[in-house]
Image 1: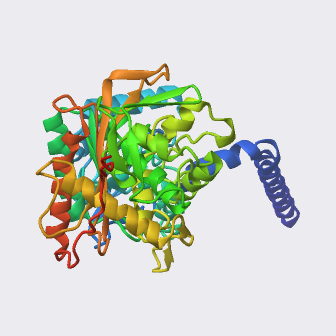
Image 2 (image 1 turned 180 degrees about the vertical axis):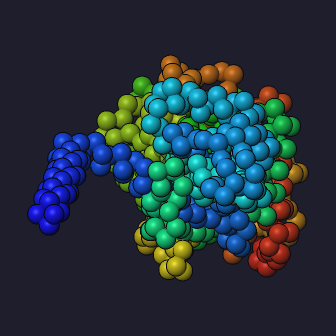
Length: 594
């Protein structure tokens, strides 16, 4: 009996051992299958189910004016994305919902918050799954505000993800829009947004977490690498002044029925107080503006400036000691030399003008006479110091350098016409900068639009500026401005002078070339006035110009605009009247009678 029991015990022991061995063998085979045969596929599947990485967007920095007025900023907005592979019906007690919720019901609730069509949302998910049944990412809606974000979050749908994605807005609209620029979908496209992207751009961070097989995030698994916000760019412009200058520029562009208008207000230290364009661009909706109006023509549109350029030619000759203001000339209507021929805008008998009178009366023939002994290499050296032929220190997006020819290879005609702004091109900003040199006692300072950058942690980096460069002597600058006062007082236009203020200015009427470079377009003229005031204590340079005016095609059409710009500055900054009388420089002379 005992022997029989021992036999049964041995059988059971053997059976247990065999079963245990078989079970261990099964586990070993399964383990080998998992770790060796199917390891790569299973690891990929596990990573796809558990490891999730999301990009965290930092906030792009602000662009502000000289007083701190915000011209561009980023506001919090959220993207709503889903994991198509994990879209499923939800059950209370298992998921964070209070009642059973189908995918369709969930999309209806989402659409009620975002304003989308739920059928469109469902169609997007189906299309993505058709494309890739294992798709883990689909953008369903973007630009959600804080209220929408909270409403979607409170739905508690595990396959829905919300991520911060700040969006760019421009609170001042079109005010300084031509300078501020605008953003594309991902990158800056124009203006300060583009040229100062290194300061403004945020550095993205990341958020990673694990999720269960049904797509639900696993608590405690979140690892965050925070984003770094962008810095703040401070401009030198005054937004209040900018708005008013834009209004005036638009007013005169409309009155003149011009193709466009541009006005620059520059302080004597080279900083830009306002740059107005008409038409201009609203960065909130840049596509509403024509492509040619989305930038700043002040920096990007070089043209042959015409007679406002004579100021620099005349000052160069005075500085070289080749002329005196009272030098007497007999100036014909037409001047010929070396096979070249130039003439004044209007026919006239031989005029008895002084060198000062030549500049005030804007005589092409007289300028050519004055420059007979001037070496063109010396002259072009002055143009180089005035800043022509090179981009300004602003490095504005799309800025042009203009065209200044090699003085050793000039043909006879260009040798003369370059004295009065033909055969040479410059941007309005270069012209303003050159007049700044005259306002600053002959020293040209770099054009400054950017005051500096303040990083998100408060570190301030001032804009890099080089030192000034002396272009002409203090005496030359002063004497040239005294002559240009006579343009304002003696030119014959009641709207030019402002009682009590000494103002120096030069007018210009320039021919515009065809865009294909095949000559001058008779239907297009550029009229302009550039000036400095007050002459006895210069504070501002004003340049205003209008492309292709229809109601008045001479420089006289720009004089009222210049007058109003100066008046605006006087009121805006409480500029006191001049305290010294204007210099009385003779413009004509009388030949001795026999």
